[in-house]
Length: 207
Image (cartoon, rainbow, N blue to C red; front, side, top):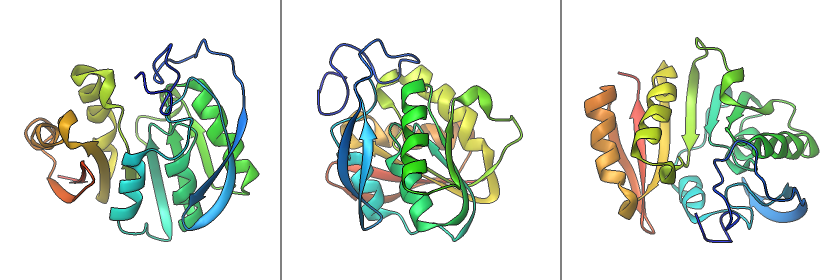
């Protein structure tokens, strides 16, 4: 992506090891109704603040249950994982990202906020049999359809039998076709939970 408010203009945020200088800076942001300070850096998704899609996700989804195992798929600097951690202090929250800088930032931000039940890892650090009660994600649509399908095919089936996933996707970037693909390819019930500000929030259930 080339919008400097979303990621560095010289590289994609889904690069495993960003080449841009790791120049950390503080960012004041409101998460779960609480004003907090986090750390961000170039070469990750939305280093300028909370992106519009994630903000819509927060506005539209129900609060998480008080406990369980939750996944933030594509964690960036951690807004979703941190919010889940702030709302559900008895849950185990894991952020996953291929971007190693994002993983480090999420871990540092969780530690700074005293969220010992929140952590971030790269995908290869997660066991194949790990299941999740809740998945919140602003998936990286711009990695391309094939790569996105591999990503979702890997993680969405890890929902527990009563689990649910919420994905926020921009309408003009294929939210409706993605909904059809989840239903036809993964054979998982996928409905439009909400539509707001140019985004769809898709709800995915265990088949």
